[in-house]
Amino acid sequence: MARVVVDVMLKPEILDPQGKAVLGALPRLGFDGVTEVRQGKRFELEIDGDVTDARLAEVREIAQTLLSNPVIEDFEVHIP
Amino acid sequence: MARVVVDVMLKPEILDPQGKAVLGALPRLGFDGVTEVRQGKRFELEIDGDVTDARLAEVREIAQTLLSNPVIEDFEVHIP
Image (cartoon, rainbow over all chains, first blue to last red; front, side):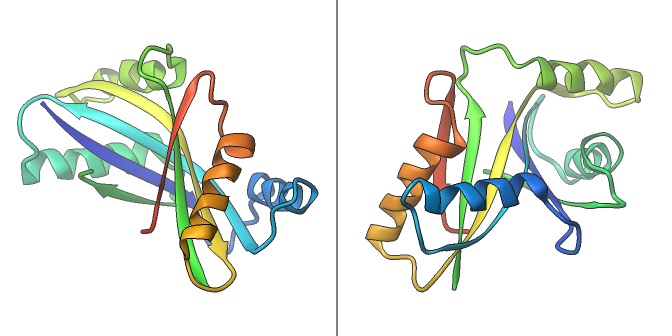
């Protein structure tokens, strides 16, 4: 059993209202020095067996078809 | 300018309906071999200046007070 992580973030050119809301709240809470916040999703997948190239290719397909919207989001697959 | 990432995941003992929904959809889409899916949040913060220990401590405080709910979520701060 192995773990694979898929990070899904909005593409840089897509407006991120959730991130902007967090950014706007920071000064009110006394935090400064943060200039930008982007919010995305993180998926942790448990894989049956070892992480082979074939399994990673499958996870990339899952990320592309089910976990992300390729029109507005980028994703990254990595092993933690 | 530097980037700091905060990953927020539900604690292992907390039920994750979103992850379960993804897990349930996988076989219907022809994917097998995934035994568990957990869905969480990823925040990418742009920091003014270098990532000092003081800045990291501040980001941890932001993560604890604003980005996560410590009752049900764990978070991790790291530099990508």
